[in-house]
Image 1 (cartoon, rainbow, N blue to C red):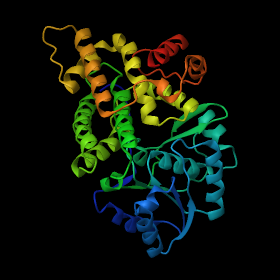
Image 2 (image 1 turned 90 degrees about the horizontal axis):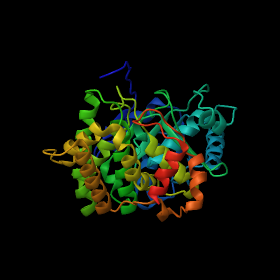
Image 3 (image 1 turned 90 degrees about the vertical axis):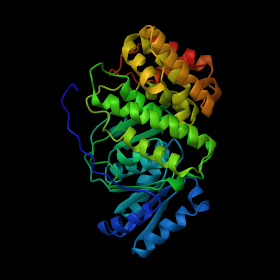
Image 4 (image 1 turned 180 degrees about the horizontal axis):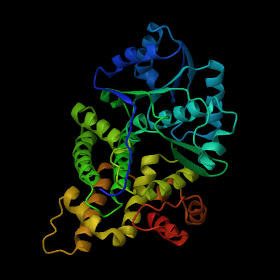
Length: 388
């Protein structure tokens, strides 16, 4: 392990079939006014909404609602949420949904008591929080982002064609999160698969960095093997509790800051995917899958030993009699075959991206410096063209 780091994660998790009971333990800690945040209304169809509202009322809470959070929360929606939180004088923001709902709730929580423009302050200037934060709690209905146990928030500005994530400190982490795998059973297959790849991409973004003997790498290889195994089961049997519970737990540990310790981390797949998403509003996990193989093939020569290790320890490629390049190549071939098998999107043209959009997407792509190669503008164009 190289470098120095501190580790703190203040989020309390309630996991399992009875996890929602944890809401009764948490609610007495907060004031009367609760802003209930959710998406398009699926929680009303599957009964989760009624269960949550009953618990809130039983605990004497005044409920204010902020519905309609979209998969890629926008600056316009954020402004709406800020006004709703202010009008409610919210003591707690309770997010019920997937990562986008949790991301959005955190953005509202740090902005409602701030007089400055939230987009400019947090997502353009990347400033720390200087205003009073409204506490957030999350009830997950979709897994993938890890937003239930981290300080990340991603917001899209359609006018500027930018989709930007800001990872805040542990003061912005949800105070508690409720994870019942059964709440994810009714999720459409496309969304489930997208979430699965978002999890994988989070792990790989951290794994493909550094070349020291790092405990975090061993943990990530185990998480990846478990994810692949459980995903294979879940795509065939979406209501398999064991598989879905494993996927939910892996998602949390993939991005709750633990495995990043001692790592420089990469995050270029996310930067590329988010730039594509800003232009197309495509599902996040699918934008990642569409650019991943071209990107990893591009950087593989610069991190060859790690890619060979990945092939052997995650995809069971026998390195005997092979060069590192041959082993690494077979690993990416195995990864690509698995991605196609479970139904992931493999090229950005499926989102409507055309060659004439490449220059604009390139300009919208933030360049990170923690991976095996710092990409130039021409490098980004090459990867995006290979992703078509």
